[in-house]
Image (cartoon, rainbow, N blue to C red; front, side):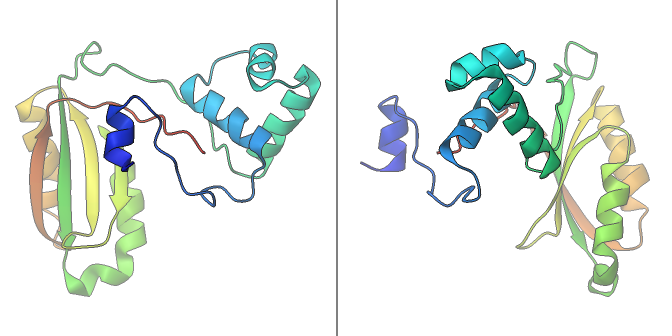
Length: 171
C-alpha cells in the first residue's frame, strides 16, 4: 500500500527505521508522546509509555542531556493574539554572499515575527516563515529586512492560508 493510500485508510505512515537510530523503542515512545503533549506530567508520560515514573524521568533527562529534546515550546494561535497573517518567503542570496550564509541565517532567525528559518537546497537558499499583524506588517518585514539587504538577490513571498503543525511519529 502506498504512503498516500495508507494515510487515506486512516493508518499512520511508516517512517524509515533509521530515522532516530540511536534511540530504542522506549525513547522513541517518550519523544513521540512529548511531541504530542510536552506539558504532560512525568507520571502520565510514564503510564502512556508503560514504564516506571523514575525510569521515565531518567530517560527524559537523558534525551535532554544528549540534545535530542532541545526544549519545550508553546503552540501559539497567532491569529487569536492579533497577528492574522502568516507567510513563507523564499530568499535567494547573491553568489558572493554565500560564505556568510550561516550568519545571515542567525540574523534572520532573530528578526521580530520570524517563526522559522530553513536553510534549503534548490533554487532558493532560505525559506522564512513569518507572522505579521496584516499585509502592511508583511510589507514592512520584506522591505525592511530583505529588500534593503545587498546580499539578497531576490525573494518570493507566499501567504499562508492555514498552518497545521506536524506530529510525526518516530516509528
